Amino acid sequence: MTDRRSLADHAAGADPVELDRVQIERVELERVDWHDSRAVALRAAMDDEIGPRYAADVAEFDPATVAAISSALAIDPDDIVATLIASVDGVPVGHAALRRLGQEWELKRVVTLPAARGRGVSRALITEIERLVVEQGGTRLILQTGHRQPEAIRLYEWLGYRPIPVYPPYDAITFSHCYARDLV
View (cartoon, rainbow, N blue to C red):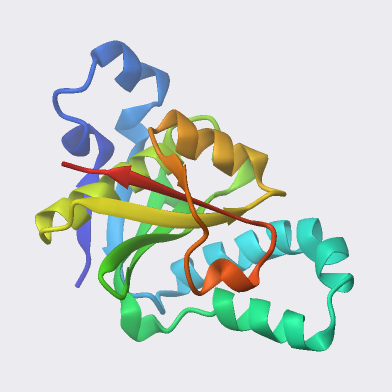
């Protein structure tokens, strides 16, 4: 069973001008299983876009470091608390997940397909993940990204995330940038 929330419902109380700008009426958020085929396809599209950005960096590392990076980036589906997809006119265009990492809540795998960028999709996904964290008693959300994703860094900073020290397991990745946002 999935849980659907329209962005109009999600953003109730937000400034109407802002709602018009991000075309709220056409975006729907849906909570799905990690293995949902649409979620898998969106994560694959993210890998296809982001992988080449880091290829030169990874090529410089020895096999042990490459293995450590792969291990750090691996996700155990059992640690995923929620997986969201965003659709515009019924077409999946965005993805975000929430993972429990020790005592922390971690934002994972945020992606908006290129054709849907600039319409508030990632912002809506992150806002909903933040709501889920607070709903479950969390007070902070952390995330990891890399130096070759400046658009992600800009988004996170624009949303109020602040840089924090690189945390495990990402300390094996020299190009990691980690962020946190207090939610309450």
